Amino acid sequence: MNSINFQKEFTLKQGLLFVVSGPSGAGKSLMCQEYIKKNPKTLLSISETTRKPRKNEINGREYYFIDEELFSKRVNEDYYLEYAGKFQNHYGTPKKPITQALKEGRDVILEIEPQGAAQVRKAFPSVISIFVLPISTNELIKQIKGRKTETEEQINLRLSDLQKEIEQIRFYDYIIINRFGHLKESVKLLEDIAQSERCSVKRILKQKEGKNE
Image 1: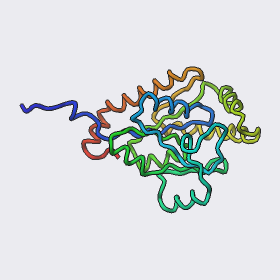
Image 2 (image 1 turned 90 degrees about the vertical axis):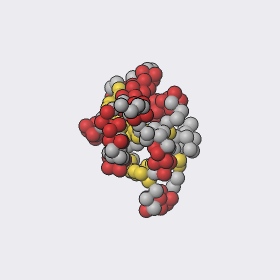
Image 3 (image 1 turned 45 degrees about the vertical axis):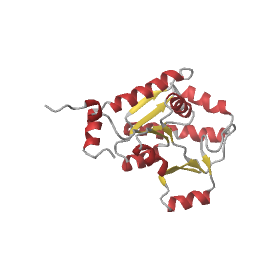
Image 4 (image 1 turned 180 degrees about the vertical axis):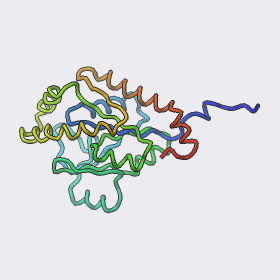
């Protein structure tokens, strides 16, 4: 019998694509940033948005802040992998950096809205989707108000949209309950999900068959 290198034979060649969604104030951004610190080869995709930056946000770190005219132009040019509108603002994920990173074998995390996540599922059926929630609605309200970046009207608008967002959970693969003050625990759960998916027989065989899109 010829020698077979099983590690080479059954190791994913392409990177994994993750979608992370959840209501504003759930702590998903900080969780993803901490994950990247521990796993620096993973690309945290930076979306573009037409909303104004919040206090302490830096252009090119949390988002690329652009105007509506440029956003519309890029939509027409098929520049985005996905795009969505929320609370009178628009968000879009540039396509090229993501496809390039995946081909290089790097994992990619997209922190996007459920509307955009649905578009990504159509383009990449193998995407791993994760929905992040706080431990309770009271904790969510506390976090949003603690930012002191939004008016009472804007906060109420976000809370009224919460139930619609939660209804989208059924389309996701995993849920992480992000307990505030226990960030390491949430990051570990994300790492466990990634490791589990790398060992997925179904995923490995699909890649070998050229179906891992």
